Length: 89
Image 1 (tube, rainbow, N blue to C red):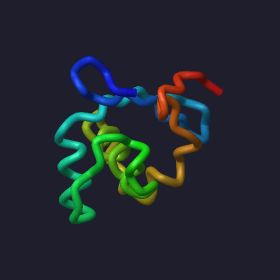
Image 2: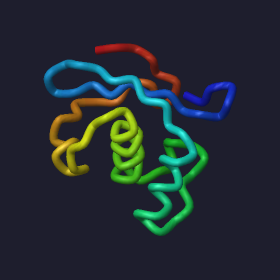
Image 3: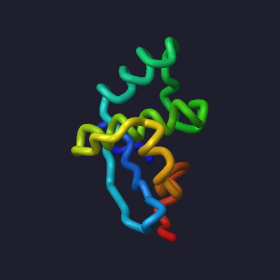
Image 4: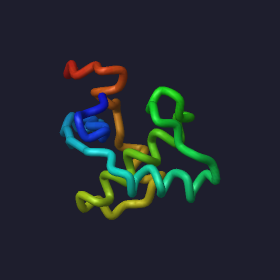
């Protein structure tokens, strides 16, 4: 969901059912642009799924996750907050 500042806030739900709130900041979108060589879409729905997951991983890294992208991806069960959906499982 887009906040007043234009940032997106999402909740990552891991396979062990823990949750992590992430704020997607401009630095995360730049990381996607550098990694995939294209301009990230302003709306999350327009990103390829791998780009979206990389965006979330980059935000998670800023919060202290030190694992590789692929290892992190194995532990993600779902993302809450896409399309304005803030419901929890």
